[in-house]
Image 1 (tube, helix red, strand yellow):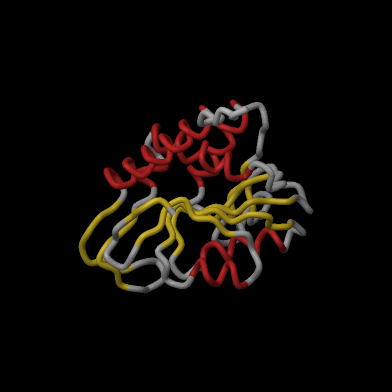
Image 2: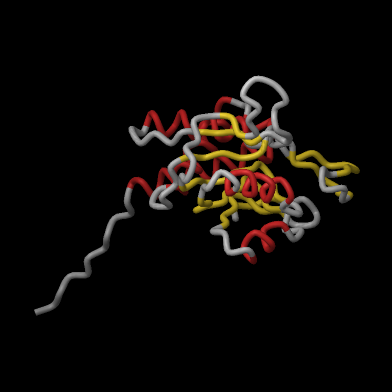
Length: 200
């Protein structure tokens, strides 16, 4: 008896994910990559600049990023998502909104550069519970300084960082340092020295 080969049809979810990833890359290339001579926040010089806010504050970009990060965080155990102001601000808001629409709410928080000098005098804004498992996000990682500052702030509150997600990894040492310290790191996009961006 000859068995007929059984070809499993691709799952619809996989097709949707690939299409969304492709569209996210297109949106980044259309809006966020600027070429020229720039000085980065790390002090390094660069022939290109990634302006994440041109995508994270754009309606389609915000949704695509929020959905992508929400999907990445599935199974991570993250009870909240946050990062340093201001690169992470629109990103964590997008994730919070998408998580509500998906029926699996993930609260967002924002880490200030400095402790507020009035009112509650908090460094972390938002409904972050002490001791929570959290995800840290940022729009771009170069040397990793802003991500590490956010990690330091939440760990000072007794929280455990279970995932670090960035939109763009410039591959200039930051992601290597995050991984060297034992954190679960993932980038959505990556860039080479010439500023060519691709899916990570």
